[in-house]
Length: 156
Image (cartoon, rainbow, N blue to C red; front, side, top):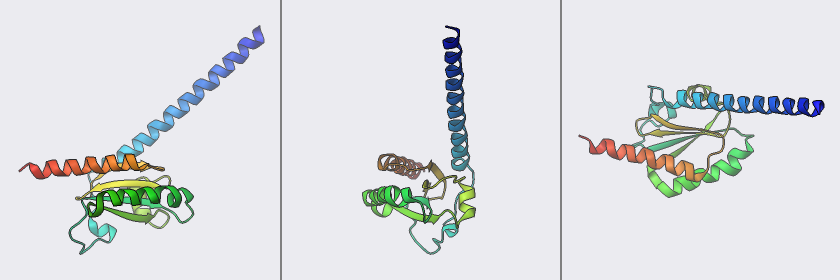
C-alpha cells in the first residue's frame, strides 16, 4: 500500500509540474503577442515597399513564412487566398520570408512560421497569430479591423 501511495504522489507531482509548464508557456506567448501588437509604432508603407501604391488596402496581412515551412505552403497559403477572395481589394497579403527579414521578424517577435500580423490602413498591428491560423479566425480579425476603421471614419 505504501508503494502505491508513493507512485500516486509522483504522478501527482509530475502532472502538476506539466500543468505549470503549460501555463507558463501560454503566459509567455501571450506576453510576446501583446508586446508585438500593442506597440505605439506603426509600420509605414515604405517599410513594406508600398511606395506609390494608392490607395492602400484597409487591412494588410503580413504572412511570415520560410522556404522550408511545409505548413506555410500547404495550410496557411490556401487560407490566406480564401481571406483575399472573401474581401477583395480591401485586404492585401504581403508575404515575408522570415529568414531574410530580421527587422520585421524582430519587430513582431516572430518565433515560429507561419505567423500572420494584421495591420490597419495606418500600419498599426491589431492581431498577431503565431502558428497556423484558420480562415474563420483571420476573417473575424479582418472584420474587426474594418469595423474599427468604419467607426473612426464616422466620428468627425
